[in-house]
Length: 426
Ligand code: F3S
Image (cartoon, rainbow, N blue to C red; front, side, top):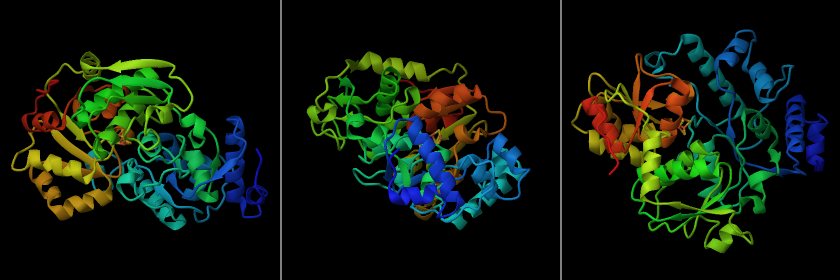
């Protein structure tokens, strides 16, 4: 890679060992991918590696979080003291809700490790957003801004809806990027890689989060890691629809970027979306494709629902408001648990607006900082799950082996109240 003088200075260790390790890691990563240079970034979304089992085992043998960061974020066999981050950095999810860790069935040592990790983040300047949707809590990069983000649903939103630029980074590359403000210039940082590959003719009205989930889930599986361009969309989607749409695309496929002609910022028209290229193929989405996606997401047989999980990706305040309109004055079945996931700033708004009271009075819980697929912590005895998220419905049976129902928010709230799944495709 061709390095600038400030990059060479850090690589030679003149700004300390941690930055040297970070540059070594980024150069190795960039060279493996054929990147010719680095690009500056002032927006990192990452954090200290999550306290998953092998990290917990390692943590028991070392004295501080600097050792964990050195090993897992910087790939350094030797402990280095981690300095303040150089650029604006927000944290991804944690493995438990610090206010409900016992109810989630987490053990005390994991809780304590997470709290030590949070203290470490505060010390080095990582902003504790603890969410998978940083764009809901103030981290909204502008069009063309180079970022270093992890988490597939956030990455696809960043590239496609905001027009900012990131690849799907990992704990290691974000750990290094936050210390030096650099990331290899490849993939979606480069103009030509952002152009469309597949044309998708949408021949159906898209009226809800569920419709957008089904479109994303169906097309993601077909295009995998390519760049679909959606044509024929007759209404303008809102933030919640696009949040779920990208998460669905990135679950059944590995989509990191898409265009919607006339709506997303790099697709004012079809020529702009494809550049001078022709689509490699043309796909179609209509009534029967929508039905197929719905059926693929509904793998459950048992209609008795133990657990309703909402907030994947983490809910916006508008979505919490929608829940409250359906739940106010009702009660969650004694056979069912209702957990609704969001970030702490959104919960603070929910508290202030009286939404938390409505949800807790009904017997539901607002959960923060984590999600069930990531934490792999579910209410005790869970066998059958219901969700309004295609992403959650995709991963829950695969990761946990639970029967899973997928449907609208209304279907999910009715399931929480009755304890039974009665959802259907309307
Ligand atoms: Fe976020 Fe967890 Fe869904 S990380 S996108 S809530 S699977």
